[in-house]
Length: 113
Length: 111
Image 1 (cartoon, rainbow over the protein chains, first blue to last red):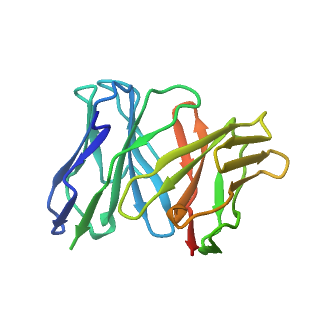
Image 2: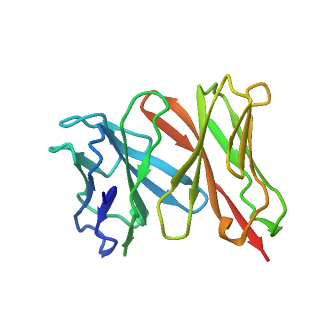
């Protein structure tokens, strides 16, 4: 099993450009999450999904959109990138419910110039 | 608002010693707390979960305590090794389906 994979690993964008980050998991997990990690800020939840076709806002959702058309995939979109979105993005998945641990992908490093 | 505090300063210890990391939280009463390990350039990896009614949990050289009165968890690594060098994150359940993470403490074990 590959676990949680993320594409791409690294990307440079210019301000105003758009892009989509792809997360895939092969563990048949119900829940999927997108976080961003910045120095001194820790992991902050952007959006999450509790099942195929569902999405919900997290702590810092502004400037991002998500879709969960298939259970195994969770896409994070930036419609008009801003320098403040320079960060490392992590996707995670879990079976869901109480006490469920999260499995993280390797991360995507995004630089917005 | 809910807040989790981990020592932002790196913890440097000598191989063989016990490393102790602290996680303090405020404005919340979590049902459980989790600890993750994160290596540079990688995603966090789950280590241990402890419930609010558990005082202590062990796994090999790892030990976690949970004091709901002090609103604090301690994470211990006994007989530490250079391979234990990493950043350690604590996380509390924000609700049934979400976690809130601390900023992490970097541990450096030197020979």
